[in-house]
Image (cartoon, rainbow, N blue to C red; front, side, top):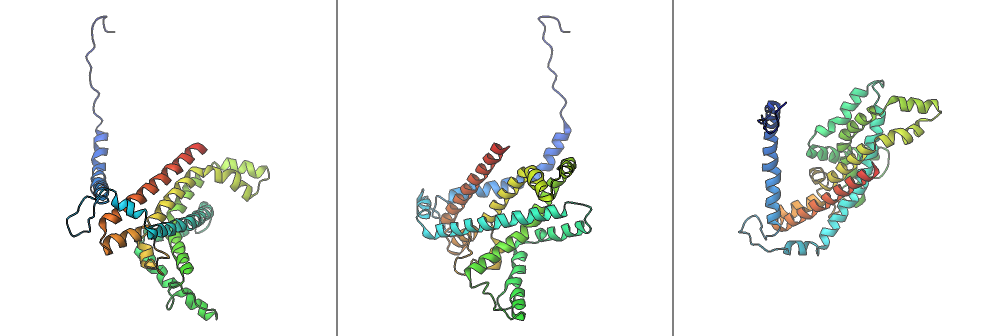
Length: 300
């Protein structure tokens, strides 16, 4: 022991070189994030307060873009289109993903591995390829579905000219493209549920539906919340697939927020105005994420 009145020299702990290596390996991703995400976000915020059109010198105009945006009826129409798309596509994607997860979670099922690969495969495709694939399926004059309807003696459906039909195509294509990842997430969650709980419920006479409702679904709540919020954000950010599949038509029936921002900024050359719309979209997604997190915390 050190004598009273004396001080013990402080010796710094040896540096953990593993932390250095971890930081070194993370550095490229950090640089990538700063250069391609943080920096453009800062530039976008600045543009939203200017009248920049991509060509001439920009002038600072304060909140004028935001004031004009909140008075723009077209903006509210597009926002409503996007909310409608999310309201329909998210439950569809969730139910399909959960159903596939429940079906393919068991390794005892023959061919489950192959089926998982086939269902996950569309996730590896670019969204443009997804749009082109479904455009071939839903094409009016050359589409597979209309060809089958014609063979059956039924009238063709105007997938590109009917607003409701075009909306359905975007929902189906979006759910098909995104269900693979969510399915794997659900499979991972289902495998974490103790089998003893299910076995005890079976002994007590519970059927499959009762086991699902009382055991499986409650244990999947955290995963469900994560899948739902990611699906909502994905729906509000949908662009390339819809652009390729319907080009936002007919009219603006399937024009969603990212298409509106793209068209306004790059076709109408209102970069400042489209940046303001981007900031509004960012705030909306942030609010939804915070609300979802709060709900998750309260229910936990």
